[in-house]
Image (cartoon, rainbow, N blue to C red; front, side, top):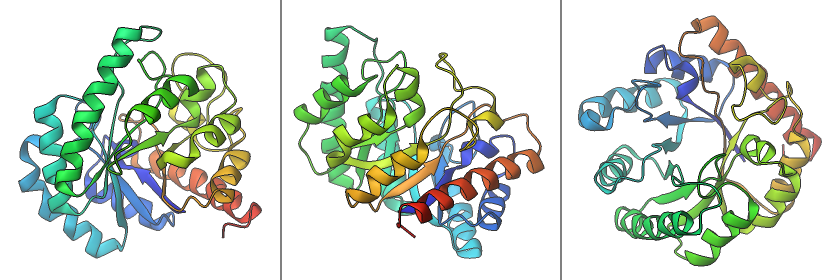
Length: 265
């Protein structure tokens, strides 16, 4: 498995700061944040201007580009995201599921949209991933299995985030085991409690909450998963560089210990 972090953790700082801090913390790579309002790291409307900065940061730090996160399923936005990913060298584009919970029409609309987007991803030679998200059409294991059954393209995969599954009232270890055959990306963070939001940024650091992340990573390892495991901490846009770096380092240490404990490293 490749340990990475979404640059959204450093949303209040430059892309170079994010890369330098994540490299210093010992990460293998990064997930580029293309989340409007949370960062200015990969602004898709001007990605061609940003691409040289990203490539220079990769060359300087040695960090691999593991994925990109862009939450919208808007076809034009996603087309731009796929173009940027193909040019910059990002293998996976993560998007949100959209829609409403417990609404069959909304779930079907999300599945139809994702199927079309996966075809476009294949055109660009990248993989589209989606994760279960609290409050959305795809929000738990049954709805994740539904989208897995509906979309069989190799250019489509599941992105699993244990914090959303935990907040959906499920056991993340059991949930990852049920869908691991199609998991191509993992967003990872901890969570204390089962409220709608994941909590304060520092409480999202692995080891701070209630989730059995060791068991979660063990299931991935036992099933031969060798893709990205990217920390995704939101809400830290007003945090200092030091605060963000501490969260990144603490979480990476826990992730490394989990990999060692289950024999993956």
